[in-house]
Image (cartoon, rainbow over all chains, first blue to last red; front, side, top):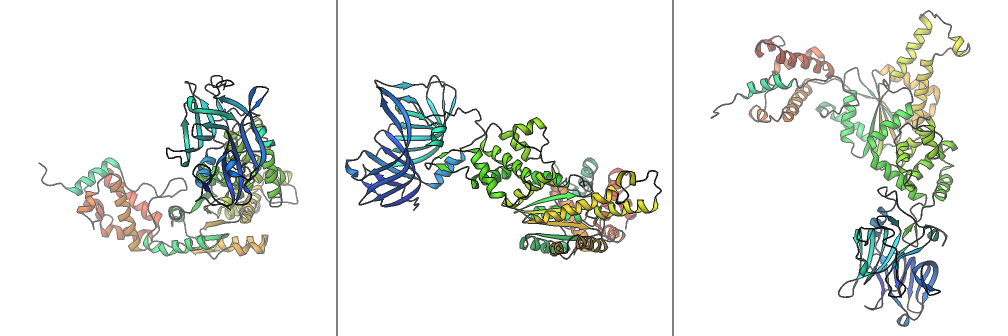
Length: 209
Length: 409
């Protein structure tokens, strides 16, 4: 089922839960990670199930924070105790705009990483900041968790102030009333102080996972 | 303070400064004609549009003598058929590299944006724009090419040409480093071996099969309908006749059998003419191509019909009954003159003249126009030639206007 009117499929804060099976482009926020998937099943008895989604985030390995993107099935039976915050289905018209930005010939010299890597992590102890290193470069497939929301873009450029500028991006976030909103922005200039993390998805990781 | 302005005198001054409103008596496929068809030809126009809109593949002959307005009809059709890509081919100019030239004309009419759109849609249908995890376009070019080959191998015979076309389209859409070169190839630019090998291609579109294949792909996948207007179709007959006369009557300095063998006496012109006819008939394999051909007489039509019948009787199914383009009647000529003058006055920003003299034929008069009509027998080209002559006389002669007009009344 693909219902574009009901874009907020689950919201733990506003107590929204729409029962049904949905396909399309779905973003879910789970703990400090983001799940991208093309399907989701929400039932009263079995909770929420996502088949073959892509989980993107940071994990601790030997006291280091390492970015990862991993394909997996997800299931939350008891939603009240789970760390799943929300699931949103991106409307088709917004996805069409997002798709138009792909394969743009205006940026032929884009750096595409083969494997998923962390570009920036706002962490007091184990923070990562490669923004200066990539200053002036165009990086493909960035995913960012920002204060009150998340962002997935076609490409990111680090400007001369060292702030990431995202191009052709989808933004999912909460407004002042804590309601979830989805928007498409051709260009989003984000101050690195509000960024929790920026991960560059590796093309090989996407192909092989 | 200006109390009175002599608008007629002012028009004469403008004519002397800016030149004649009638300059061109031959319509060509290169220069756009703005004037629409005259009233008596509207029914013919409607019939043609009706045939175009209700049929997918056909060859429609339009018969009309020299200078009757066959090429002008093309421009009217082009201006009227918003949802069709109407392409003009003159066999007088294009009889070598027929498919390549037709493709070039087609692309010029279609434009780059629709070409990009079609390439994008094709790649999409081959799974190139599939979103992994609902979001990420992970383009695997080799996989997309494989899918394209699998989908199309049953439809097209020539594997090398098919591979070239698929490689060019996929490189154009999915490989940003080769996109510009691939677009040049798709636009029909000539490319050397090095450029072709960079794109992993064997030939450019000068190769007959490649240009035919691309033409077929674009026409069959375009959202617009396609109309091919082949002017001077009689070129095929004239080439054959000229060559036959040459073989029959002229003395040969060199024996052609040295070059072409004793069995096949046909000269290159005959073979070229036959090849063009074959190629035009072969175009009917492209689904959705509507062909209009112009001929000068019904005899030529019968000859062409006979030739098609000899080649393949089934192809007669595509051949429609001919439509006839007749000369202008007197009312048409008056209407044509008025429209041409209106357009001229609008172009020189002197529409005040029209407001003050709405029914006037100035600087000519009704008698002169009737004289022109009688002398030209309603042939538009002859009418325009007369108008050019009289207007040139008005502009360049020191005689009074009335004295000039008297000669033509």
